[in-house]
Length: 405
Image: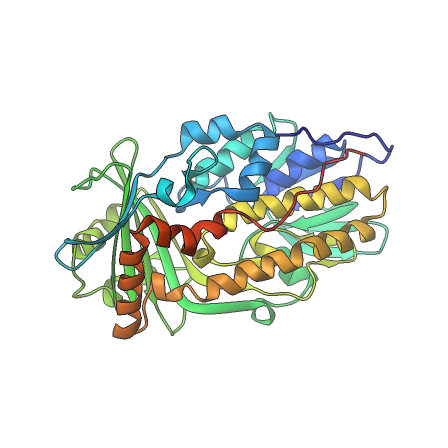
């Protein structure tokens, strides 16, 4: 890896409030620190979040992690999966894909729990960033010279810039840009991810998938006798976002009568040590910045779970935003414009590709199920897999050099 260019320019000390301490927020804080700025993180949860799904991490996001020096930690915490196996109702193998057969190498690829990725990024800050937990913003007053931030619990404070890194349901986006319905594009699917201890059977380093009309169920064996379960389910009604009881009841109803191990996985759900549920949606906005406020990660351009790269893309966005702020010589407006121009085509292409993948995660009908299973069988052929997937492991973007101010 060629070391990024370093050149001093004398613009530093900008106070930046970053709302959200998941993936995008701590990544942005890391790079703002390199430029001598003063980032503050605020997180709605009372502690850094646990749970979430396993993310496949590669491409330009991996390059950002490499520049942060955290790749060894990601490798320690992560997994190199040896097989993605699709099975029928009786558990018989339909198709099998070896990730290394697609990528040719696993040296710059790792599967890692989203919470472990977030923890590794946060640890890289080494305590140098103020973290406010169990709080969020409830008002933003941008007067052109600074942003007066009103918190739910903390006293109001002034910041030079505010960045929303607070995910699909971003509070910063609502306050600065408008209500969710202006930007959220629901994909007709809900996702649930949970961890259960002691589940049997186990298949080490294998992702086992079973799909029927309307859903897909996946289980993966993690360390410490933990099994991660992922359900993606077609749902056209109201999405219950605030009640775990309603969420689990929705899953029980939708998965009633399903084959393979699905009944056992549903039965294990109430004993989950972590439980995540959300709509599968994209965020599509004409601009990710307004005045002294910007958005990164899912808050700005969520590609949805279907893209399989949301965490890596969030790191790319945060890195590019920090890099553009570092080289803008105090002109945040110029930095924001360059940030949008550099990333918009790239992220729009990721979103467009993801919209066509619903058939893989939750087939609408028997024809889509047949298409999914046929493609899975073909993916077991190395040359076909390389043609179908190889390009997706190479992001069509060149990261800018980081030039601290």
